[in-house]
Image (cartoon, rainbow, N blue to C red; front, side, top):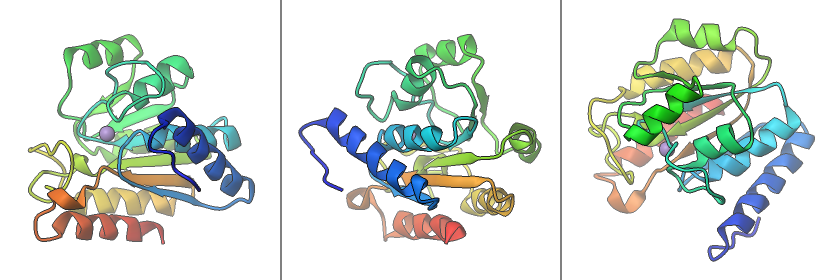
Length: 204
Ligand SMILES: [Mn+2]
């Protein structure tokens, strides 16, 4: 897969096409980043394969600032909801948002929870056959994941997230996932890299 850093729209399209190729072979698709905007291309490919599927996002932020294309890390979820008319979304661990985003979430009845509530998750997935999971590493408390663009305090403990991911994996419904916003240059003693690997290990 060739990434064109100077042409972001083209890069997202490349990501979407590459992921779609793997879904068509019935492969499990894992994306690792890097900027959260890659999830836009990855989720689009997932939805082409599984039009009835749902999306669970673990993120400290709403990523719903604006709806222009190509979306950045702070817009990708809004573009998916607003431009692509996708509504089966559950956003978990979100604790920092702009007024614009809260208004958008309210208007579009976006399911948002600051906590990782298992009952909420069970209820969300009960009628779904396929799920895509997107994990922004900043959903974790900044003590555990300082190596990210916008670390936020008062977040989730890694063990808690891992347990939820293990539960989701056990349902057999997850068809694709990504783990993003890990930034090694900002890391402290490699702890963010290590916790990211530990979370990814659930899916291998
Ligand atoms: Mn994000």
